[in-house]
Length: 46
Image (cartoon, rainbow, N blue to C red; front, side):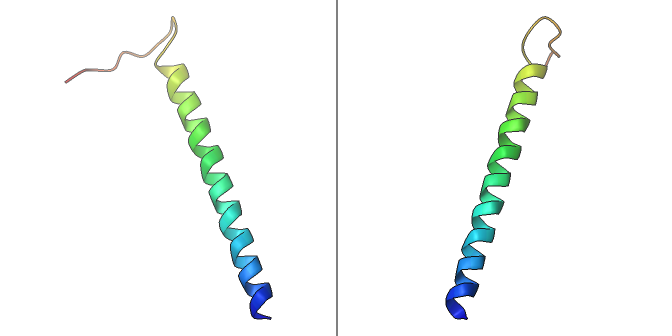
């Protein structure tokens, strides 16, 4: 029983990590698209 619970917890952790990585990659792609190219949004510099 304890081994199954550990396995389920490890699988859930792996799923969360994969989803976060996918979300981060998508966010980076959107940011790259918004800040490059002919229709890029100007970002102020400090």
